[in-house]
Image 1 (cartoon, helix red, strand yellow):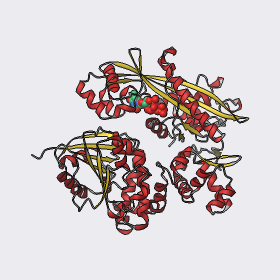
Image 2 (image 1 turned 180 degrees about the horizontal axis):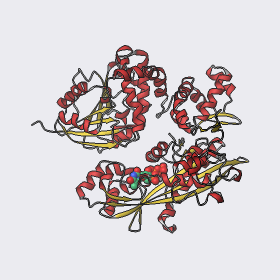
Image 3 (image 1 turned 45 degrees about the vertical axis):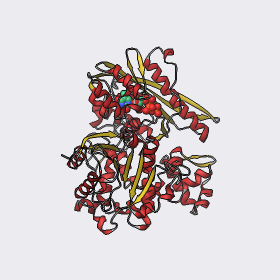
Image 4 (image 1 turned 90 degrees about the horizontal axis):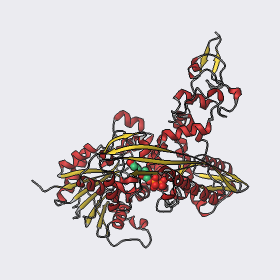
Length: 616
Ligand SMILES: Cc1cn([C@H]2C[C@H](O)[C@@H](COP(=O)(O)OP(=O)(O)OP(=O)(O)O)O2)c(=O)[nH]c1=O
């Protein structure tokens, strides 16, 4: 849904977020903005002393981040995006600028400075409009900053270290994340909360209004620029697509006139009024663009799946730019059909089109070509060939309240032979993208052996052994899964500290280990099976050992949108469900795991760690 027409203005542009911050991505995508993410390679090393204020430093860093991405994309594609957004968040206390801690000691120094005191969080934002003139990149930069005051409670050393050991501080300015565990350290916040999290959305919208709808003289009194205009003012703005600079589309009298009959184009969309045979004037509601986007959403997914299936992104990864005719030849498809599909992919931000032909965007190169560590091609193919069919049963599954497809079409996602490898590819790509975050969500260095139950291709095991040099990991999965594991071993990187054991974790003895891992396993099963599995793990785990569960943990107010499709997926596919932290805590405690803690491991994944208590 796009509430703000000013955000909608950007929907037709190619927008790039020059940031690796998952928080910024989340804030902007929840606001309905469509954009690509191209993290900036700009080294944040400007000389702080040369700036008159801390926010001038943050703004300049944001600007350099965005400009680096604009010029890199321009060099690569000979065409820059329309808009590049850069941001930089810093914390200031007692005249010092704090950025992200480099290690735990650094995090401790930062948090000790903030302890019991008020500090400021500044985010500098740069909005860079790009165009290409005679092959040269031309940019126009708009910038602003936002300040929020945050006060920390008095915190004990023990609490500070517990927080540091959670791993949360490491990628955050000032060494804390107010949106997660760090929220517990905070006594009060004055100002924009999202500014602390990394992106001042409210100020951003105001800036866009300023840029896209410069006030007409007549409007100066009407549009208050010290606040985001109320929604119906936005609607008015969106209705005059060419902006308010056209005095012919005058709009006198204020937004309350919207309900009045009359020929004021600034208030009511053109063509929205008409007299019926009785001469009564009706008003057509505003065009529901967001809703139509939802209705059409399946077409976009299917276009992506089809382009993946036809290996369009592989072809263009090998050779680009290519004309539609050449691509059609390589994928053995009709020219007219290929051209339409390619143009849709351009509109979806997956491809770029220039005079010399089509190219992949960075996003497609990285995630939609079938090779590469972070490829989601397998997931797209699994969604196309398997999930797509299951979702046709959604209505029935909702009516019955359970996975009607479960008994009818498949016993388990990896059971059908032709989908087995595809499912493994899907899980492999997805796990590669999140494994490091899962491995570092908690400090696991105290463990020397781990057992990953249902560990599939060993992607998580690899991230764990890379992170913890003393750790050995045994991956247990069904024999028909383990049989295909060699297809997924990255060349030359197989580590001797990982072993694969074929077995069924519901039936066979579990290998001995200090830490048991269950990544995206428990949500597949109903409570009785979860109890059965946890009781087996609990029986094998020695006191002081651990259990680490990686799942999307349901939480109020958090990324609900991201987890919704997943919860329906479970409804149509398995008998399982997503669970909340209290539910996981209860389940683990019932099986003798205490000190159950939660950490976030990215946009859609959380990690729950419990410690095995001594039997009474
Ligand atoms: C204070 C605070 C910061 N942060 C985050 C926001 C930013 O992501 C990060 C500050 O570092 P930044 O350098 O601003 O951003 P980044 O390195 O994460 O991403 P990029 O440079 O690619 O844009 O700290 C929180 O998530 N919560 C908080 O409470």
